[in-house]
Image (tube, rainbow, N blue to C red):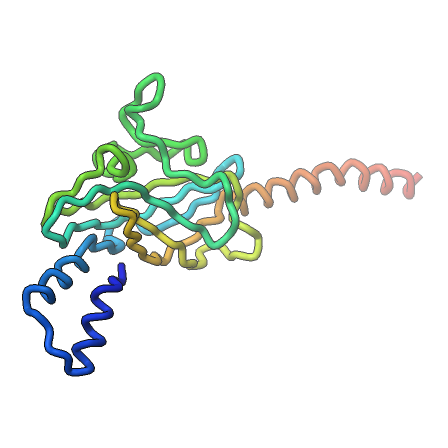
Length: 213
């Protein structure tokens, strides 16, 4: 959602009863139109997964629609997590990898892969032009190096900040509610406890043998 300074000024003048030129008001209204950005209802939930080797993997299904009468360039997409992760990035377009690939994938979620057509990552930057009335819907995929902090529970919902910046520098923001899947981290912690218990067993047996002797 973008707030237009000119639009606010026209509204204030209208409230004061100041007569306004109709064409000027229409130009102001049109200038306020831009991108419609919403989380998309999808079989894939908004999710942040614990990575198998640490870090995270994120999936957000969205719809982006151009409600303005002009072509809009989708310049950048940024995601701000509720914890600090300076290494969080959107997944790279698989066609730009060397060697070239055809599906989105990440070491943070090796069991998951996504056809290029279902993701929007490559639609930002040089290929991100949206004609008036056109829309895009698909997944925004990202990965980070920091694990989900221990203060968050498994299956807990948290808000992230999704920012789309157009070619003119306007920022469109949405705050999707995402589900935290900490199953990998919980599995690692369980395995560590089991290994620690296994290391303690020989010591306990030796102590019992000494007592019996």
